[in-house]
Length: 196
Image (cartoon, rainbow, N blue to C red; front, top):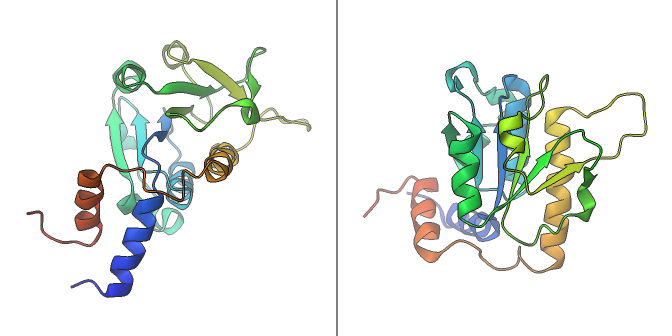
């Protein structure tokens, strides 16, 4: 049976989850990076992580890095960008892709106080044309050195914490965003209680 302290912590964490801010990883194959992203998502209040990969079995999470944070996320796997991003777009999510291109806007110029799916590509290839076709906006992180990009997990953290900063300033973190039924379902799952 969970302790009162554990119940209080699960309730507090679920109350700050942001179901309308999703992270999408396309074609990521380096377990170290994916595991660090999982840990960052949990720390920043993300509930949904979408993985786009025709071969998800190739990606194994590193528990030493993720600290088993995947237990606290709803992780979905999609074989193609269309099967992931199409339904999100239809559900009203703005698709924001991170990609090196001339018309990309600074990530700080995005209004993160609305439903957004942030799309990050693989370490070597970036985002595919198929995923970019769904993008409503393309963003970039300013790079002042000789390198063109940051490590995947660092990029996710930089942008995600800007989203968290904006949402905190607008009061999103102070009130539960999850529908009551979903809140209770996840609470039971996280506390290892049997469903009714």
